[in-house]
Length: 343
Ligand code: NAD
Ligand code: 89Y
Image 1 (cartoon, rainbow, N blue to C red):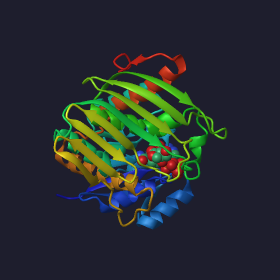
Image 2 (tube, rainbow, N blue to C red):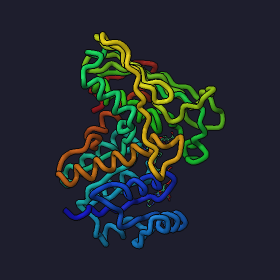
Image 3 (cartoon, helix red, strand yellow):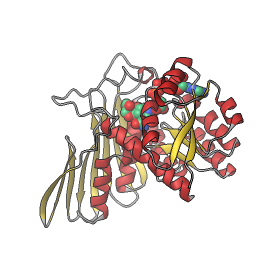
């Protein structure tokens, strides 16, 4: 079968990882790129040898000649660009956070559904090697039925240097990073019926919250905690590791710093190295995220070719996005929020 031709919109900081990922993906490649900033367009176009370059997404869609679009811009432009893709009947991948609000996210999912085009949110953290290893152990019945979990991301890494816009929004860590941690909690323990959240801003130089603690009730009966912080200064900086603790009826799983996976059950304790691969183009400490970019893009290419839905489809992501909205609502009111009411 011939290779799927992709077009990428938004040639900024993170898109470079996506371009490297596409270079490695089997069955798909990028044939056109777009950015409003001529400097970014030139840097990425020259680096990856892409001749078709656009400063205007509408012009790129009008010219066509591609089978899918990969939207790697920041959140403000996601809705118009996804709707543009739907109007041209072009399957779309959209970066997280999918939309500014849940209402926008729902409208974007509807636009693609009505147009009959596949939509995937680039929610890559569940594709990280250590997270997949935890899920595999759980699926193999290693700890029986999980009844409690903790999904923790605590760091003091300077994310504002490569992504200065993160310091400027009234919402920060839940929308930017906690969105991944909440998605991992769903991926591991299933959908959520209600949550309670508390937030804080510790860093005086930013506008939004940089600490959040969220208590989740999962539909299948487990209780979990999602705790995220960019105000935590540790001896060994863990960025960008998500640490996981799971207690089950037959044992426990611990994913600890350094990608150490420890599984304890009646057979004893097994310790596995769940480190991500360091891809040829990747660099530490980002390599965990970079490998998951490649993995989610390969998944998209495989599923698009097979005509099958992706793991983080627009529909699926609404359930993660609802947790983000609910967390802000709960932090503001101090009260628990029912997720079903939002969806
Ligand atoms: P960035 O600001 O560095 O890059 C965005 C680029 O998009 C800019 O070059 C800008 O000129 C361009 N752009 C914006 N609107 C456009 C439009 N309408 N048409 C054409 N070009 C447009 O941002 P970034 O740090 O690369 O982040 C991009 C997205 O990636 C964000 O949503 C961010 O949350 C996400 N991100 C995801 C991960 C992950 O692991 N999934 C990690 C980092 C960032
Ligand atoms: O934008 C964020 C993301 O998605 O992963 C880590 C990050 O780059 C900073 O929090």
